Image 1: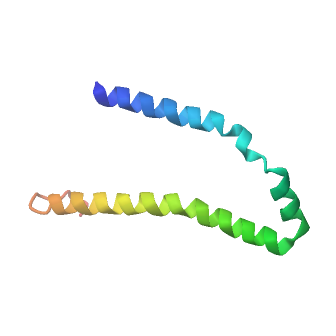
Image 2: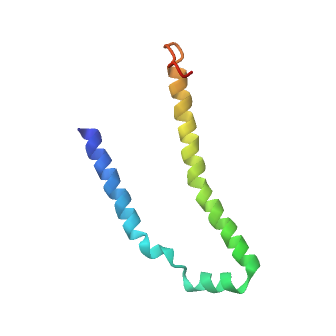
Image 3: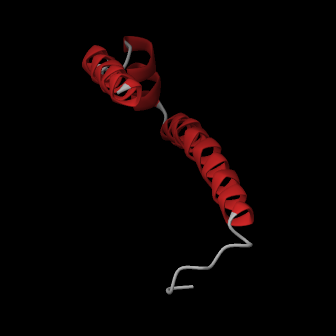
Length: 84
């Protein structure tokens, strides 16, 4: 039952973060003017956004690979499922 309470709490926190971030979709006035005035600057801003976007995926992917590797090493002595 504890895992269910933790799952509900995590879902509520995620929903709260999503609802509070709705106003964050707008750019600030300075960023908007800077992006509209120079295409070179706009390209650099887009590259920076993509860089910031990729970091969480790399971190999560690293942890997923480590957990998979640990799971695979733990089950080496056991019978493998038929699809292996």
